[in-house]
Length: 235
Image (spheres, rainbow, N blue to C red):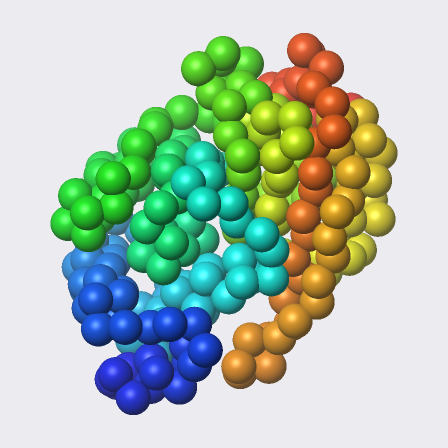
């Protein structure tokens, strides 16, 4: 299905989709599809599906939470830039850092940032390593992640980046509440508390859960652990 301006207007109704935002999203779509022929970025390439399952699914959850003006945000395991790059198109004041462990994706993100004037800092590395780097640890108002890992592991990857008083925002599917039950111990150990839990559906009916954790004290220094240690002993 072709996603024209009328389709976008219906989809993003109430989200202030002006001409500039629309054109930047369409440019994002074209870059994503073109680069996807060279490197595996996404299985979703139909224009209407990209608009719904990548762009809308990235932007809408952040209308449910407070994103302070000028917030420093790190997107952990960002892949092709979701959710933070569509969000940046709607909230240009955000200072954006994109983190991914695959260099090919970082190359794409660098090209995307330049083409769309996102001003993003694109970092190639592993969260469990950079989480110990003082340049990144405790430095962000918001850490976010979408479809990266189970929430229990995701807390350990993301919370070390968040400054005390900041939040970790996890975009989850229909199993989000179940994952949160299993992650309660990890949340506590890593110095956070659940501040918000919101269930919603996409316009096509797909269920989503938004989980926001506020960091109330510093993470213990030994976290994050490496992936092997995480698997061996779950928090």
